[in-house]
Image (cartoon, rainbow, N blue to C red; front, side):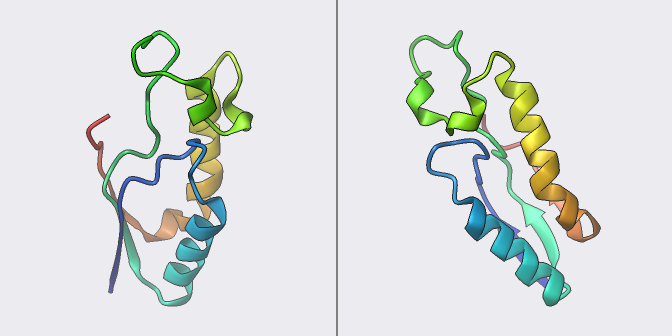
Length: 93
């Protein structure tokens, strides 16, 4: 009994927090092991002048320490799922 999630991109403007939490709740209710196939967050930061756009981030992450804030957010989102996590892959960015 596995659940496979890919590329959640925590902190991106298009990330559906309610859906992610619902998926985790389903995994908990159904006792499914959770595998996340990387790209927990975009990792594109202001010094990447060619690709970074502040509008691509959720307003919560319009701070000086974007990575620190996204890390805290990931901890908040993944803590309920900790007993289920079997894999969190690096992803491609």
